[in-house]
Image (cartoon, rainbow, N blue to C red):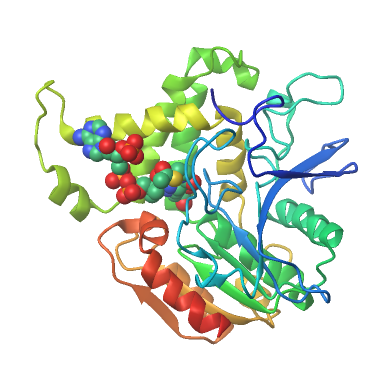
Length: 356
Ligand SMILES: CC(=O)SCCNC(=O)CCNC(=O)[C@H](O)C(C)(C)COP(=O)(O)OP(=O)(O)OC[C@H]1O[C@@H](n2cnc3c(N)ncnc32)[C@H](O)[C@@H]1OP(=O)(O)O
Ligand SMILES: N[C@@H](CCO)C(=O)O
């Protein structure tokens, strides 16, 4: 319950063990394990590699069926494979579970060197930290420069950080449904979600019993979050004020379903750590501001957003497009922020154009 733990089936994951890592805001991780998946074949010169960056509750399983070790099917099924937009006849595609996550990469539900769960002792991690870990993975795989770095939402933050922090290592950038800096609206909803997790007595300050996790708190957090991921229009069309036979509002039942589903595959500690990573996101920090930071990017870039996204409104992608001096691509969709996961055809077309 609540994420991948040592002893669970490995599924399609491969692991890389890295030495001690010092997050920029303090603390130390004496060792870091990275869980990743790959598709296709790396060219001899390492020049055909594509890095896919997952969002908050995603993981390395971009495509492929659910099965032992993988609680859900791929979150971008259709985008990676032979002849797909990320064509595995051409590209070597890599996706790693993020630092602080709960699907095999070191996070708060991992064990420290003494065999004790990190829990509340897990350090704060920034998007920059996460990219430094991914750079170590790239080094280990023999990839000096990615042909493309692709990401939406929280994955878009890592993609942009790559292009700004290590411009010489990013050939093309696909930045989707994300922003250059966290907004008050995003921080407000995320800190409210964190408060929901922390208000569950089972949370126990972050050192909860893995056999009895704070599912109530995590479930409330997911309900709040999921509302921000969809549009008021779509929810209205689908559910209106309908009441089910069991007496519950259909929309409340739908949100409860997503809450239960997340509790079966995600760790509450990772939820708090990763939402805090997003709260602290500002690509311009220490770089003279967002505009100056974007000026460092040399990658040929595509910037896209979803017209009905109320969490990462299109103005945020416009800021990045302007900073990179590229046109903004607007995906028309009723699905709100989750449109970046659902509108696979529109996303795929933009990816094909970028990689042609
Ligand atoms: C396919 C996956 O689940 S991928 C899982 C891994 N997830 C990630 O990596 C994170 C990204 N994914 C997500 O956030 C979401 O899963 C999304 C964006 C892919 C979901 O988008 P959609 O496909 O539009 O699904 P939607 O939000 O309509 O939810 C459908 C579910 O709600 C259920 N549902 C619909 N109405 C109701 C209702 N009134 N009461 C209860 N449940 C309901 C459906 O039965 C369905 O259940 P299932 O997912 O268990 O089959
Ligand atoms: N539905 C996505 C939204 C975050 O971008 C997720 O759960 O990861």
